[in-house]
Image 1 (cartoon, rainbow, N blue to C red):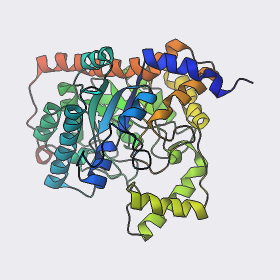
Image 2: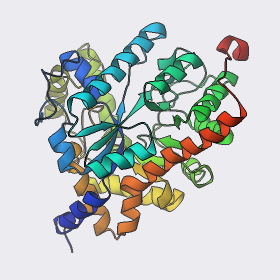
Image 3: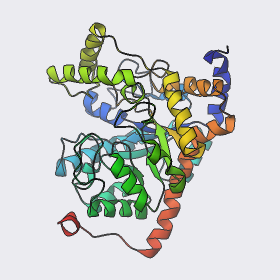
Image 4: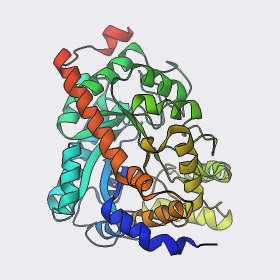
Length: 398
């Protein structure tokens, strides 16, 4: 039997030509939590193993050519505080691209992504993780787009007033009238609608009304691991009609059934130490590792993630797959995908399973570029028909 290591040279060769576009990385929030955005104190031009999953040397080793940086803020920040924190997240991404110009290039369009690749730089895009970031204001949504945000996840772990989350109690059973207007305005702008974190009803509702391709920036297959954060098969089957892309994530509790119960226990332990379950600061990780030493963690592997991609390819088709690792947004990662340097291991595993070079080029680079270009094209047509929406949630939802 051929070993994964037998395929690593070919995997690295393929990534040199068709680098990974990763749909979701939470390094900006890590910079906030660890060093209050002081880039001198956490310099990603050098290896930061032990502090983060991400730095430029490991991005290079992983064959990453494009990164959607998450400009995430927690759902307990609401109203103006959520908007302010989102702006601070956007600011640090801009400062990263200005500081590390030899390696990073701010990308606002699909053409910018291609230019960055031609220059040997990593295309840096932004995604706002959670509709609470706009404080129910379409004007704020437009300003986020103007600052470079190219997708918005409609919810995070709690409902917004206008859309249901996968991890909250149903309220709207999809989108409200204002939620539909948010989607329409995103389509008009050319901002990708991200359906990770939302409920299946919100996924289906959005796909019914969307006038541009959607993304799932970091979600895997519910048929393979029955976690509410994953995508049901009927929704995956709708992607070819929409043109969208589902970007498989690596978070163990989303990809390995045995990890779900363990993670619930680990989360309870974090709360018992007055820590948020998603806390990945050194203190948070020390608590996690102490728990893991007593209660060993079920280990996801590269093969676990590949199982999801095999299934997603079967249901949605190769033109609708991508990768969204969620590095620096999760405490634990699969064996072989411990940080952003691990993508060659995943590509090698898929090569071992018989994936073609053409299929892998779509998975790593081409589909992500195509979906952003599709949103841009749809926006050109929509802007020709209507201007910015001035609707409010009060007017539409009462």
